[in-house]
Structures are given as structure tokens and as C-alpha cells.
Length: 133
Figure (cartoon, rainbow, N blue to C red):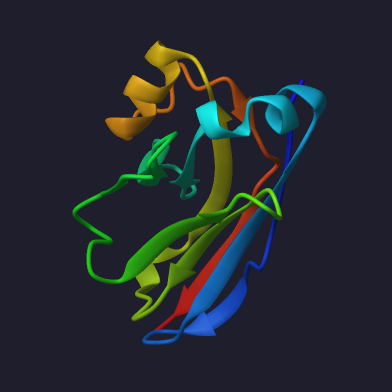
């Protein structure tokens, strides 16, 4: 099993910054960490879940939604088993619940790379980000 716990959400004004963190644990994650891809998704009230950013297994190639390119940065610290999302130049439309996700299956990671969360195996509970204008 894999457990993911997000933190770092909050309320900021437009133009501000936040860093989200996701702590990963569990035997399978610790044993096979290098094989896990990880991602951030978000869901605003009344809207469908949206892929924000993914970092691949292995070399850690990154992928971003067009809506956040140049403003958000995904990174991971393998020694700490942490995933991060640095968000800057925040906009009111970034307001959402942000979820950390992880998988080590080829299909799950393929889907995550495409910023599609439908088949990603493991999810956190989410952390709320609210951006006021």
C-alpha cells in the first residue's frame, strides 16, 4: 500500500505564491520509489478533475498543463519521499482542491503523463488552495 498526505494549501491573493507538499509512505513506495511516477491534480467545485503536473519515474521528466506552464514547478525529493508543487503568480482560477497521486504501473504512469487521473492508483486526501482577486 501507498499513503499520500498533502499539506501547504491555504488562502492567498492573486499574484501570490504557495508551495504544496506531499509526503509518501508505505512499504511498496519505499521499496520501489524510483519506479513511481507522481502527479498533482486539482478539482474546483462543479468542475471535473484536472491534471496539473506530473513527474516521471526514473529521470524525473516533468509535464505540465498549459494553464500552469511557467507558473508552477513540480519536483520530488527521493531521500525525503516528498513531492512538491511550487505555485507562483497564482490566479483566482487556480482555486481548487489539490491532490497528490502516484503509480508505478506502466499504464497508470502513461495516464498520469497525459495528465489523466482516471487510472492512477494512489491518491491523497487533498489540500485546499483559494486565490482571491
